Length: 69
Image (cartoon, rainbow, N blue to C red; front, side):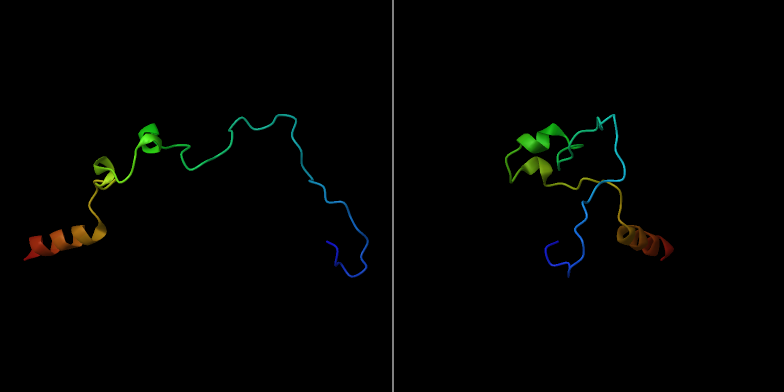
């Protein structure tokens, strides 16, 4: 803000305020994660598998192609 080419300095203020602060708390990468992830030492055998057991789109297309033959 020092190099504003002679403009008058204006104090920057928020245009909104609250009387009831948020109760959500501060977010961090482990906010909605299982606690065992934070306490696990890596590399770990328990986290080597896929998180989602659902088939991928490629696997579904390969299966459809095999069924059509």
